[in-house]
Figure (cartoon, helix red, strand yellow):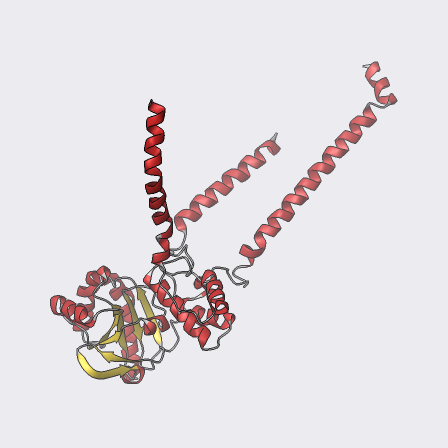
Length: 160
Length: 180
């Protein structure tokens, strides 16, 4: 009986639940203001650029992700700059001139960011070197052991 | 025996470094402006409450001035309004408002309610001039010298401390510079 009841209930609820989920998952689309692109190429280029640029209000989001009013303005500005014929680098430079390197999601390679860019590689190299040394030592120990178990070694053991 | 403690020592060292780093990280909310030391952007904006009257880079420069970015929708602007008013009352330099993405009627009402200390308010309706100024939130306050070069920027509400430690001494220096 109870089984029948639950299936009945879930059958009736299912469409509603589905509708609710659909609302929840599609609502974010409304958060994004519509920019009108002239073609697909422009849209993809704009999308790419806004993913590379940081929203300065909510700093862990890119311009593409953020629905802060400033992000909307900057997305519009980026599109305007693109239409003025600037290439991607020029658009980025334009924003860096106003908002500093901070606006770039991918930090530039400068003397200030060497540690950031190459630090991990250096750490991996050090780790590999330590690992290599450890393996070598282990091998040497094994070699010594195996030479210890050679006939002379056995003889030595017998002597003790 | 001592070798055994090397990893523990490294671990503890890293922990201390991490904790130190967390507590001493620079304030991420404040992004230093690359525009300090650079000339202000070119602009020409209509003046709030003065139909048809425009003010721009040319009219503003020639003497040091303060440009305060504000809006009626910005709660922090109300917080600093008393300070901005006090600064304007010293009459050391003109204080211009950049009314940032605001409804003119709302802005006028706001000024009517809290007082209008500004020499004039420039209307940046769509926020494009603010972008040129590297504004990423209201309020922001710029100190600009007679040549139109940005000398200082305060992000967030101007406090009495900002005034006493930075703005006032810099303004006095700018005035002296202009005299000599």
